[in-house]
Amino acid sequence: MKTRLFTIPRPEGYEQEVRAAAELLRSGQLVAIPTETVYGLGANALDPEAVRHIYEAKGRPSNNPLIIHVPSAEWLERYCENVPELAYRLARRFWPGPLTMILPAKPVVPKATTGGLDTVAVRCPAHPVALAIIEAAGVPIAAPSANTSGRPSCTSAAHVQEDMNGKIAGIVDGGDSAVGVESTIIDLTGEKPCLLRPGGMPLEALEEVLGSVGVDQAVYRELHEGEQPKAPGMAYRHYAPQAPVTVVTGAPERSAAYIRSRAKADTGVICFDEYAQLFSDLTVERLGSVHDQAAQAHRVFEALRAFDHTQVREILAQCPDPSGLGLAVQNRLKKAAGFHTVEAL
Ligand code: AMP
Ligand code: MG
Image 1: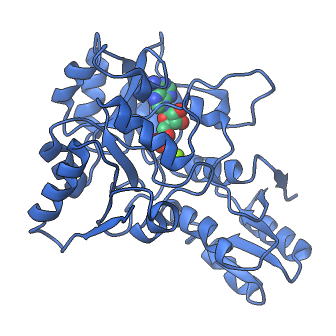
Image 2: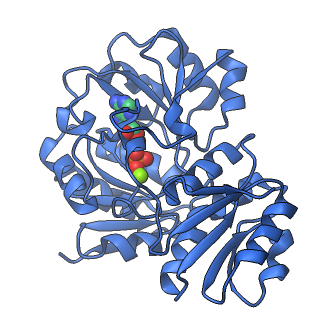
C-alpha cells in the first residue's frame, strides 16, 4: 500500500487535507493523525473491520482496547451509558485536552473497539487538525498511539513513517506533538475515580476537581504473575528501544554520578540538560532541564527512539521525581526499561 502524506500548511487553510483524511477514514481506511499528546493511528471507531486493521497494522493484542476521540462532550451521550455529572465536570475543565475517561459503553460501540469490555475510553483531543478531521468524518475516531506495538510512541510524522509506511492509507503531518506523552486515563465506572495511566494531565490537577483519586498499582510497579491491570494495555511491555534500558532513580546529582561511574563506551545516556556535559564522550539524549517537566514529557519518546539509529548496547536513564508530569515521564521510562530500575544512593 502506498501511504499518502498530507502536510498541514500552517497555521490555517488545511480544509483540503482534512477532507481527504476524513474521506479515507469514512471509507474504512487507517490514517495517522496529529494530536497534542502523541500521533494517533485513526480509524472509524464504529466500524469493526476498520478497527481490526488498527490491531493488524500495530501488531497490537486484540484485548487491548482503543480510545475513541470525539469533538466535544456533547458526543458522550451517543457512545456512553449513564454518563455521570462528574464526567461533564471533568470535560468542562479539561477538554479538549490530554484526559481520557472510562465510562460504560453503549451497544453501538463495537466490541472490537472496546477489546471486548462493557466500558469505553473517550477523549477530546486539543489539536485543531484532529478536531477538524473528526468533525468532517462525523464519527468517533479510534486512535491508539501510532507506533508499532511495544515501540516508543510517535511524537512526529517522521516517527509514524518509520513504523507505518506502506501499512496505512495516510499520515497527516501536523508538526511535533506539543505534550509528548499520552493522555491520562481516569476510570469513572467504579465507586471512586481511579487513575489507570498517568499522562499529559497531572494527577494533582484531577485531584483539584475530584478530591482523592485512587491509583491503579500498574502505574507504579510491574505486576505479579496473574495480576490484571484495569487498563489492559498497562500489562504489556511498552515504549522500548532495541537496547535494554535501566532507569536510575535518586536525586539528579546522584543518578548522574552513578551513570558516569557505570557507563562504558557503548552506553547510551538519557540525562537532564544540566548533566549532559558529563557524558560528552558518549551517545547522549537530553531530556530537558531538570526543572522543566513539560520539556521532559515533550522529549521522552524522541530520546528513546533516537538510540535505535545508533550502535549503543545499553541505555542508562536519569528519572524525574513523580510530581506533576514527572509521574508520566517516570512511568514511560520505567516501562521502556521493563521496570529495570536502580536507585543511586
Ligand atoms: P494507547 O491507545 O496506545 O494510548 O493505549 C490506550 C490505553 O487505554 C491502553 O492502555 C488501554 O488498555 C486503555 N484503555 C482503552 N479502553 C479502555 C477501557 N475501556 N478500560 C480500561 N482501559 C482502557
Ligand atoms: Mg500506545
